[in-house]
Length: 157
Ligand SMILES: [Cu+2]
Image (cartoon, rainbow, N blue to C red; front, side, top):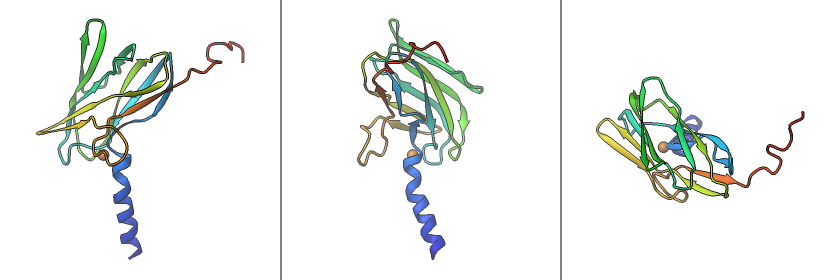
């Protein structure tokens, strides 16, 4: 009996920890930060073969980290990077992987929403819902915090 209860609790807790989510949910304004997006599972039982991250307009620049076994496509509008796609894998549905961007963040604090399209074999998961509440497919959100007033001022120590 006890064992069954523990398993049920684990099963209930799993979805919140999975999804496609940012490893670090906040970063300071005005600088360069690495944003790591974790794909916690496939689309149901289907393996992942592509991940597209839409870049919010407020982001100054975005550069993808290469991954062995995955090719990269960068979509631009003029000079602006609008989306980055990794294609490859297949990443089995019961395994996870991480996709990283080097972001030049805006000077203003606020919330940056990164809608993600996870393409699997024969299925697509769009992580584009406003997060919170009962969102089944919440978009990852990066909270841009006020810049550290001491950053770059202390060269000693
Ligand atoms: Cu999930």
